[in-house]
Amino acid sequence: MTRFFVVLLPAGLHLVGRPAWAQGDAPVELVTSRTPLTISVDDDDDDEDGAQDGNAARPSDADDEAVEIVVRGPPVPATDMIRLGGRGLERVRLFDADHALSLPAAIPASRLPVTLKVVGRRASAAHEDVLLTAERQGAGGPVAPAAQVALTVVAIRFVGASNEVLDPSRASLQVSNEITDGPSLPRGDAFDLTSEDPDNFRIEVADPTPGAASLELVSTDARTGAVRDRIAAVGLAHGPHGGAQRTAFIRLVADDMDRSAPGVQGQVLRVALRDRVRVVYRDATMDMRVGRPGREDGAQAARRARFDIVVVRLSAGGPPSVGVDDADATRVARRQVEIANEIYAQCNIAWGDPADTRVRIVDPPQATLLAVGDSDGLPALGGVIRFRVGGRPIRPLATRPGWSPIETATALGERIRALGYGAEVTHNVRTDQGAGASADVLARGAGGEALRFEADGEAPLTTDSRQRVEIGSVDLTDQLDDFDNMNASSGTLEERTLIKTLTDGDPATIDLYVVNRFSSGARQGEAFIEGDAGPILNAVVLDRSGIRQERQSWTQSHEAGHVLLDQPYHPDNVGPDRPWLLMDADASLGAVSGPKRLGEDECARMLSESGPPGSLLRRYDAGVP
Image (cartoon, rainbow, N blue to C red; front, side, top):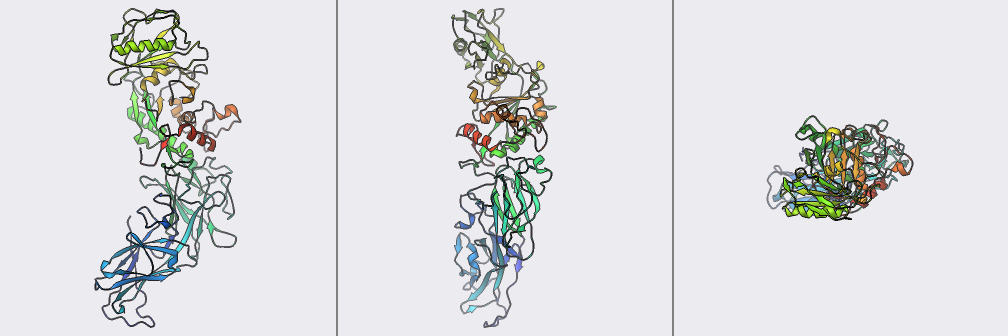
C-alpha cells in the first residue's frame, strides 16, 4: 500500500516547570499517513478468522483499519529511551511489531525508526480526545520536546433491516432477492426506519467531530482488489436526539440492469459473491463481505457450481451453433457463466471465473449410440443382432424371447468388450407410452473416444420383428429432436446420443450443450435432472434463441435452476403467476422486473438438494477452483 507521510512537528519548545532544551538536543517525530487523524473502532473481521479484528493479539496484514504511526528521529545516544504516553489511550490499542503496548511504554532510541500500529477500541466522546505523545529521555530525564498526534475514534457500523448491528465476524451482506426498485427498498433516511427485506442494510456512524460529513461505499473484487462499484456520497441523518447518524437503506445487486434501476440511485451498490464492501468516512474505514467464507456451513456460506460447456457444430467441421467462429462461440458460451454469476449471487452461489470455464466446440456425434427398444421398450421375440463397432464386427447375438431391452443391451455390451473396447450400458426411464424402459449402448476406444456403430454389410441390425435396434446420430441440419411430456425423463434418441456421447462424466458439473434449434420450435432450453431417475442427469441444452435472449429470459440460469432445485416444475404451474421469478415458465422481459429473482425458499432448496459434499454445490471462495 502506498503511503504519503505528513510530519507532525513537536509540541512547544518551552513548557512550564520544564528546563529549556539544550542546543543540539534532537526531538523525535511522529509521522502518520494523514492529518487530522480519524480511525474507526476496529470491529470488522478483515482476516475472517471469526473474531473482530480489534480483539486480536496483533493486527493481521489484512487489517485495513490499523493505521501506522512511525516514530523517527536523528541518531541519538543508545542509552536514550522514547517514552510513549498521552491521554484517552483507553480508546485505542497500540502495537509494536508483534505485541500490544501497555501505555505508558518505553522504546530504546537505538531502535528508531519504529513503526507502530494503532487500532480503534472505543469511540471518542469528543473530537481529538485521544492524544499520543512520544518524548525522548536521557539518563537525567527529558532531553527534547515531545511530539504528539491527536486523533478521533469513530464508530462505523453495518445495521440490518431492523436496525440491529451486524457483526462482520459472524454475519455477511447479502444480494437482495427482491425487485430492485420495488417497495421493499424503503426510500428516505428516517433514523428509525426499518425494511421488510432482510437483505437491505444501512450504515450507522457515531462521530463527535463538528461539521457535516458524508461517506462512500465501495465494492471491490475479493481476489484482485479491483473496484467493482461505488456510491460516492451517501448522506447521513442524525437521530431525534443527536448522537449517531444513519444512512438510507442500501440494497446490493449483481448486474448493471439492477444497478441502473430508476428511482433508487444512491441506494444500490453492485457486488459479486465474496466481494468486500467498504465504508469510507473521513478516511476511516469499515469492511464487510458479501456471503460468508466457503469453509463454513449455513445459508450464507459461499458455494461453487460449475458448467462444462459444449458448443455443437452444425455439421462435421462446420460452423458452431452460435457465434461467427470458434473464438466468438467461446466468448458467447463464457458469457453464460457471467450471467449465471449475476443471477445466483442471490443464493450465495458462484459459477467461477468465466475465463476458467472449459468450453469445447465439437462435431455432432455420428452413429455413436446403439438404442434397444427406443420409446416403446418392447421385449424381444427372438432374432439375431449384427453390427460393426470401431470398424470391427461383433460376434452375432441371438436374442431370447422375452428379453427386456436392458437384457439385450447388456449382452451386446459383453460382445463389444470381447473386442477389447469399453462398453457403457444405460437403462432409460420408461416413456409414458412405453411397455417398458429402453436401453442404450455406447462403445469407447482406449483413449475414451466414442466409437462408431454401423451395419455389418447387407445384414439388418436385427431380425427381431418386435424389439427394435437403432443407431443414434445427431443431425442439426434438421434441428435437434426435443422431448415432450411423454418422454421428458428419458429424452429423445438424438438427445441421448448428444448427451451420453459428449458428457464429461463429472458428477460435480452441469453439462451445458449449445445447439442451433429445437425441432419443436416451442422451447429455448431444457434440463435433465437427478430426480427423474434416468441415466441423463445434471444436463442443460440451450438453443440460439435461449442464448439470444440471455438477459430477457435468463434461459441458461433458468434451466440450471431446474438442475440445482432437482425440480421439473415451474412455480406458476402450481400457484399464482409471479413473472419476476427466474423459474417462471413463460416470462420474458429485459428489465429490472424481468424473470430473474430467486426466492429464499428456492435458495434453501438448492442447498438442500445440491449442496452436500461431493455434489453440485461445493465449498467456494474467490480464487479457489
